[in-house]
Image (cartoon, rainbow, N blue to C red; front, side):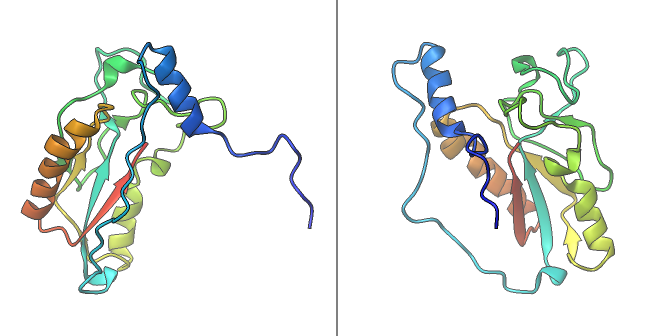
Length: 173
């Protein structure tokens, strides 16, 4: 077994995020939300019989908001601030230029890595998933734990229940 070279280490994204917030002028580093007790509900039926919904942080493409394609620099103009929903019977044009991901060590070339709706549609056809809900849902990346917990998460839950979801697949970008 060969050991990885010294330079081959995980990217310290949590520390980089803290440093970024300090560089933006915030008085304290970013505080990551974490909980000692995480709610979990086991499936009541096999996944092949379950109704699955997709929750994404990808944003609908906005033609007037600047460059948003793969390789685009961070683009705050492309952010969205309210939960949105769209149909799952097609694959809409969503992008991730509004998200601060590591553009040096990764790319956004394959949308299936950050918006796997086409793969989920294939899984339904193959019988691995019972069905998709009629809509997927977009979760804003507002950088506010308070807004996420008090506004966005309850709205996402409401929409998931309205669609009869048994399972929610959360895919952050």
